[in-house]
Amino acid sequence: MVNKYLSRGRMYILFKKNTAIAECVVTDEGDGILEIKNLATNPIFQVGTSDSPLTFLQKNRLQSPWS
Image (tube, rainbow, N blue to C red):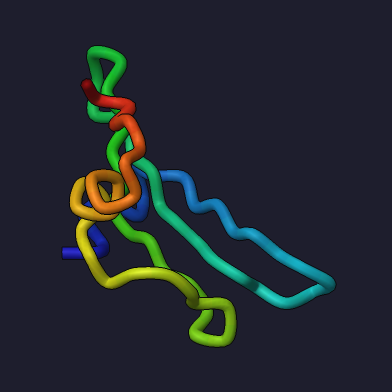
C-alpha cells in the first residue's frame, strides 16, 4: 500500500537540532486536492490528544477550517 503513493508524493520532515520531530507524505490527487497519506510524530515529542481532529476542535471550542 505505501509503495503506491510514495513515488508520487512528497515527504516533509520537521527537524529540531538534527532530530526528526515529525514527518508526513502529501500527494497531489488532482483538481487542487492534496492528501496527507502518512503522518508520524517522534514519540519523544508526542503531546496532546488521541481524539480525532474534529473532536479536538469541538472540545477546545475552536473553529474548524472546513466549516
